[in-house]
Length: 213
Image (tube, rainbow, N blue to C red):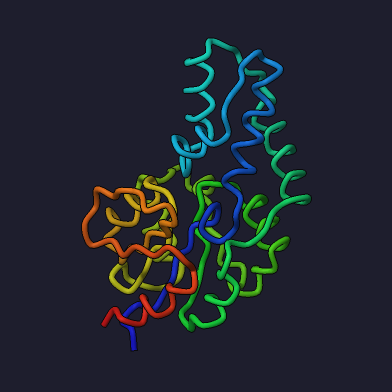
């Protein structure tokens, strides 16, 4: 039996295939400001980051002023894109069925976005309302606080927990939290952190976790 007793999943890009949609929404909203952003570039450079900092960086880089309701309008565009196009990451539903551990979702996104994504993709049943948002504590990945807080609320020590992530911000947060870290890495990106387990397909995850004794 694996010594890992609790699985802490990132949401965007790990459970649901949403990174392209979220960054497409950014490109859509910046276009009326005269700024043309490449969605693939945004995914590569901003995946997993804190939204307010992403917008601040883009606004400064392109010398534009964002309206007070910019984030609210962004959330509305994302929600509509999710309704039309969101799917689970390939193999995730099957992997979740095979994983007996306690499970939670730990995300930099707000709870409403997490819940919508899980509902649309048929994944809510696996988490029993164990949903944790960085907005609730005001600390975002790569700070480890969100993972440490989530583990405590789930009733497990960091050494009993595994973090499953697709972004370097999340990987760093998991490593700093002292947890086992599994990197969903379909594009074989370089990772500066040692002791991180890489997998390219969600179907590999149950056997990888089971090997941790």
